[in-house]
Image 1 (cartoon, rainbow, N blue to C red):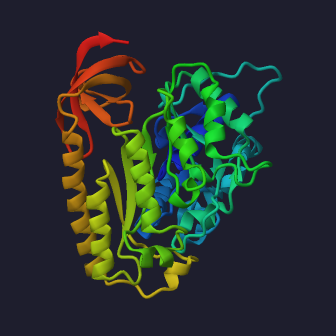
Image 2: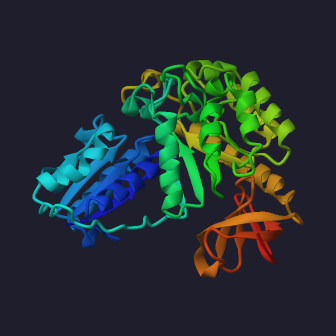
Length: 423
């Protein structure tokens, strides 16, 4: 039996999709590169906004036309399975997130011939073997009024530090040169474990893995980071850990943050960014904002734009508010769509201007970067020590470390060239 796996959404979804593919390969299933070549297609769904949900349903219908069976998992299961209607429904299995590890058994029970005892299982390398996501926990400790992911994944359920370290070792053993720690809120890791360990404790345990990897710590809430900020910043001293901070602020208005139930104020976010940049002047700051949240006034939006101007993130993800069924915010009076669209356009323009300015500071810089993926036209993408991407004109071996000189900048990446020095 051949299986095709397709994932959408956040890095946690991507990591879960990769884990599904590896688990199926370990159990002897073939991995297909396209749905038309597969007996079963697995769709890892995202439901963060309404338009994404609609896209997932359309993609499910397409997969149903190309594969004999479809398995749907991810954030739309079980909350939104009623949206899946059509001829493929009778050939579809909805698999909750917490049961993804059961998929090989589920497919076997559906008619796959059993493997002979002691059969040698093929080792199938994932398509993105040079980088691998490691999920730290399901759910989170927050209760944001708009968040669909929290509804889908529930309260936090952290993996133990020992289990995570083993997953990191496994990724490195499969050839990964970059590991991405991911979750809805990485700084909330450990809140439910005995002794309540914190993220710096986990990073310390991973640091004892003696290998030449790069480690990216994913998205975290200012509310959770507040309890472990000094320790987390100290962990970034390890040259293997990217000097990268993904810290969503969502709004520059305290009034809107309270309505969002984010659990912090603008001053907390501002102080955390200042502390991180004081310790690491080359820090790569990534943040997120939601525009058009119910009740957002022109003054609230202006406050968000002022905050973005002030902190000047290298990366800014802009999302227009989308009311998700079952959330508190879905019951609030909405902002007019034309107003929300205009605010989204305004802050997107601001994002492009600020990011271009921030990245242009790197022109003339020479330093080490690790080649992690190939781009179009024979190009390659490498990452500096702060996770900024550098597009190189020619390919080099994946996982190799090159000295690069930065010659140009765009709003989302740098342009560089190797100097001829390899590390």
